Amino acid sequence: MAYVAVAGTRLHVQRLGGSGPPLLLVHGLVDSLASYYFTLAGPAVELGFDVITYDLRGHGRSERTSTGYTIGDAVSDAVGVLDALGVTEPVHLLGYSFGGTVAFALAELHPERVLDVVVVESEPPTEAWAARTVEGLREVETAIVDEEYLAGETEIVRKMAAATRQFEAHTGATAELVDPRWLVDADRIAAIRPPVLLVVGGASDLSTRLDEFVPLLRDCTVAVIPDQEHMLLTYAPREVAEIALPWLHARAAP
Amino acid sequence: MTTDTGVLDTVAVLIERVLDRDGAAAEITRETSFQDDLEFESIDIVVLGTQLADRYGAAINFPRYLSTLEIDDIIGLRVGDLVDYVESCVDGP
Image (cartoon, rainbow over all chains, first blue to last red; front, side):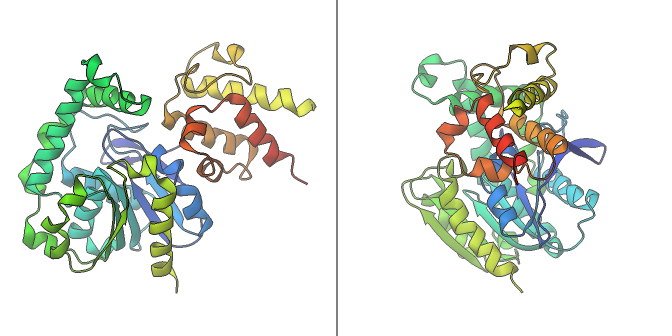
């Protein structure tokens, strides 16, 4: 198992082969790199990508620090992982949910490190995004004690609710995610340079809000997977792969 | 078929190591369910995959194997499924 130290924090990294260009995969909140390991990683390696993914701070097998959960920290951790692996050339970047929000922020703050970005059910880190995300975390945290609420839910949702409660109880994430220093306005969204492919579920909340940020982006392609809600990589992994990987591969080809 | 017990025993020891639970290996059979019996988290499967690759070499390609499974197959994954997969990799020509 591979660990790297980023600013003194131990992060679990998986580098899955492929001699081609680096592709960094960033997972979402209360999730782990397993979401990629089970879905996109194998097919991406087959296409030749040097697939790199890591457990976010506080997630999976990475260290759970009590602080360090601002968007700025998440970007520093991602860059730190690349630095620790000696990856200095710009990378293809793919993020799911919160991981895509980190990808937007990374592309904005460090455009020299990013060739292009695929985001799956993600939006840039605006003030409205931060408020919604924190509210969502609190809702899930409350739901865990409400058996009636969870009665009809799948095992996956029950596990995520339990994991959210643990995450909330042991970190300052909800307070830090709304740190305004790292949130972006329309001008900063418009300054994002790398091309973006946005994959959304046709029945997701995000699909109703695309007008808020897609027109601001310089170069953004939107792909909709019909009838799906937010958890696209869980419930429609092949559809995501069929859209995201050819787009990345075409851009990576010489 | 002599390799059958060998791979199962090795997988059981690696599972015990991943879970950091002494004595777990003795209870593990082909029918043991990762989720229901061992309470594996998905990240534990990743760690197990890394250890299997360390043990059996690069022919073990867990991400490729897992990407062929449906979500219900992954939820219902049993130790025997992994043993069969490992054997299919190491029994090559």
